[in-house]
Structure formats: structure tokens, C-alpha cells
Length: 95
Image 1: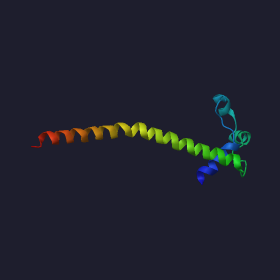
Image 2: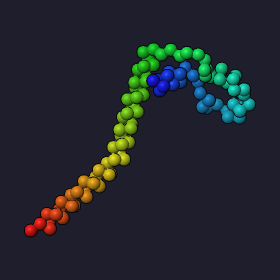
Image 3: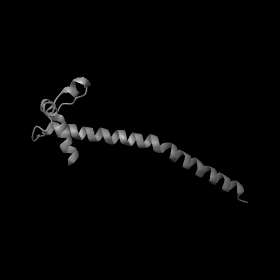
Image 4: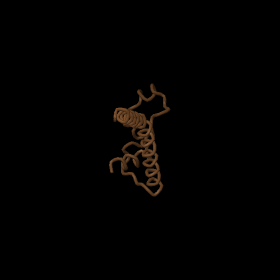
């Protein structure tokens, strides 16, 4: 629920990315917050926001799954290879 609220809040607010850093340092925090729309009251979410949130969750799950596949595959392959070698050695040692 907190992630949903943060997502909706982020849709209505602007960011400081791409702005001149030195100019931002000279600004008053309250004025900058007002300009960016940060803390401007309750945020309403419609169907479009829900669809975008669902798409973001799906993309995150896909990317996370692919990363796990990339990271876990070498471990799985090494364990399989080790088991195969152990089985071959056991068969060779059997009378």
C-alpha cells in the first residue's frame, strides 16, 4: 500500500533531475517544494495510474526473474556437473 501511494504521489510531482545544481542550492526549500508539487495535498489515482503501476510491477518481476536466472544458473550448472561426476565415479568404483 505504501508503494502504491508513493507511486501515485510521484506521478503528480516533478523532480530536480536535469536542473542546475548550483541554482537549486540557492533556492528556498519551501519555494522549490511548491514549484515541484511536493506535498501538495492528496493525490487521486485513476485507471491509467493503476495500469501504469501494474505494468511497473510486471516489468520489475520480469527483470528480477531474469536476474535470478542469470545469477542462479551457474550455481545450478555447477551442482549438476558435480553430481554427474560423483555418479560417474561411483559407477567406475562399483565391481
